[in-house]
Figure 1 (cartoon, rainbow, N blue to C red):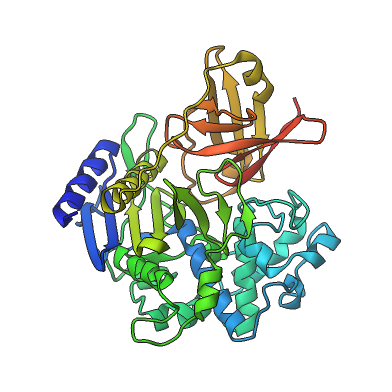
Figure 2 (cartoon, one colour):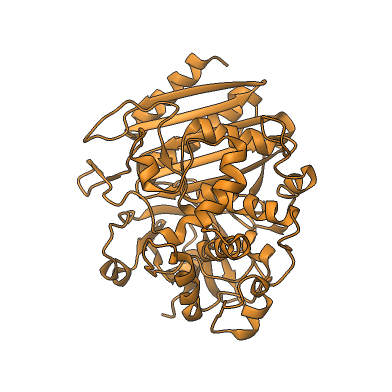
Length: 459
């Protein structure tokens, strides 16, 4: 593949999905290839290039996990130890669970913690400490260690462990443990570091379909460990190459023992019916595509999306960063990743085919499902199922910051098998998979989407 072919595809995909700016990097055959298209902002446009900074969203989580593993290698953290060994003030409504949750359960999302909390704790150095204190009001969604459910809360707690062990702020610690030794000079958490460099702003679609700039650029400081890093496509490709390597930086310094780096890509818990992967490693989503194991993570911010995927057995990586909401940015990133896998490696991803509509099966899943911040509504017109994902009105009313817009209802199809897995077949979440959870009596109790559990609301 040539750089021109990659650039032509990126330009065509960005145009098709209406994305203002995209930055793509590929590591293949021992070479880096980049393709950048469009502008940083529709209001104050500058060309996107390989040094343009994007908000990574949850692609930040591998930084947090890898930083903790550096502390493991130094003998300062034990993955199997209870969180309270390092954060003794950690409290939950369920005292037994708070005492049992381990560090490793935070990193593979099996701690039983909810997705996230709508708590604002400011931008000071005490933001994480105050956020963890608020967890005393947060109920579990499952007993620790019994199931995987993607948790931003868990990574904020992991970030607090890093603070307590190092005596530094989370941001200072990650810079010292990772950014500096790996030469990630275009990666940061601080807005002041970003303002002097070219950076992309997010965009969302208005009700009339037009794009507008997202006024909240990144999430609150307490969410930095799970979603607050800002980086360029060049730094992300360098980061990917580190994870493809043996734990050494480009100058030869051993940043992480090889065995610990490899341990991050070994399955720790299976995932069911998820587009994100077949299993969690330590943080990483592990997914087999066309018989080939891939390792990756995606991320979303307000009107920005990021995707990082590596294929260890082929020494391959692809990074895609875009500055539009899910009906644009997520779609273009996924299209780029699929194209790169096919054209560089001959690896083709195939979507499952939904079953024909069945009224009886459809009616069994109808209703509302919720977590702390969002609701899913599954409905039918008698001929097809739809799914609508929305931020709760009370959550919007309680915040002073701009939140991403809700997505309109999208088509949903049930998949072959036991009838509990499903696929979103249109809209901004097209291609996302999930499943319905049942209790011992067979009654549906919840719906998983994007690795997150939504509990069924009684009718």
